[in-house]
Length: 110
Image (tube, rainbow, N blue to C red; front, side, top):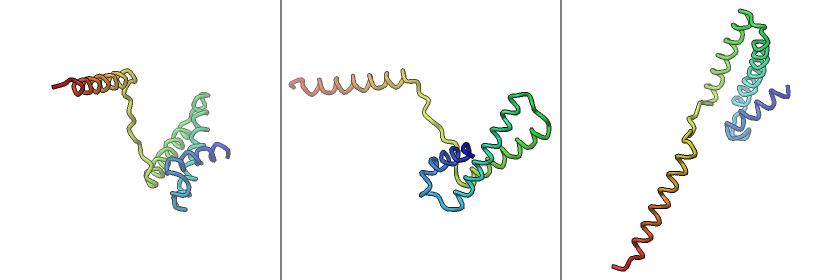
């Protein structure tokens, strides 16, 4: 139950908080949280070599249901910036050099 509460809190945070969700959205997210916890328990069984065809089918159905619940409330994948830090620092150095050059050009009497 604790894991369900933690997952629900994470989902609500994705939706900008419980105050930003309707009762129906919270209900869907609560069910998604339970499915997430159940899927995690099945994954532990898989990791321990307790895989059966029935368990795989249950896992697949739950995972698909979970995906549909997330789509219903509008949770979706978002791309994230994976630019290496070295590229970002190099760009910042270039911008600083350009700003310094522009400032130096302004200081030169014409």
